[in-house]
Image (cartoon, rainbow, N blue to C red; front, side, top):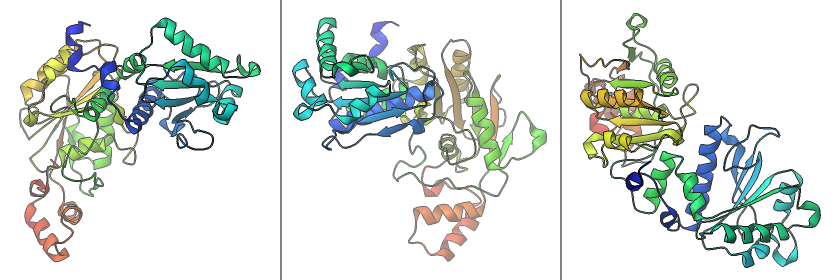
Length: 390
């Protein structure tokens, strides 16, 4: 890929170095999550390690997969422990880290005995090959001879960590937000439907509200069935879905629900979501973002809100003609003739008054139940006055 395009999305060592300790730990956790999803492993295999100052110096991030699990990439073994350090970490500090008071940490010993891997991640380091070898040699020397051939040791500096980040666009967006260098208008999975509040529960509706226009004979579908159909399409590379409906019907909140594991079956991976609202004038615009897309990126799902029909057609055509691992979900108000080729269109009807009443209870708890019920009856299923949830 042309290096002149890199700053649009990818990051480098200088940005990794801007993270604080807790953000670095979260970054490694997110990267392990993304890698396990990429290779089809459950993310329940990841856990945060013990506190940095615990007697055993608990590992910051631990991956524990069944023995014999299919190989990954930066997660070197089914059992891998990561120790994160924001500062530069030279050979002289390695023995003290691995052997405080001259005794090898029990966590490292257990990894080696179990044919696992121990990785020091130093965001502040930048090591040429000779410097990397010095650090690796220091790690090996910290082990008793009986363990030196049993485990796998490695040292990730800021450059190597950046290469790992740059496989996963949603992680890039998260990191850019953390170091205050965001791409304007672009974000990973989050509370897209109401940025003024914490994430709220997705309210299921007894009313059949989703129409699969490719199968009109099915009639309006229950919410969960519609969600599962949309997920099935977007889980495939180059899948394209157009979600339409009147303002206030809850389209954006439904798009969020596609990534929520507690709703329906086979939720889409949150780490794959990349979202923008065209009303926010994202930079770069979606077409330009795709022009700069690296084929090496992990499977991603572009979610474009308030997306005009012509932009949807352009993006879906671009994705179909590429070798990128992308699927596309666009959201727009109800357009009767909006039936783009090779796109499955789902129409979302307004919600029931019962859902509006529950939403009012979430958003305006000080309003009396009687008044909430009256407002819900008058709303005709339109939720626009209660926040951006459409």
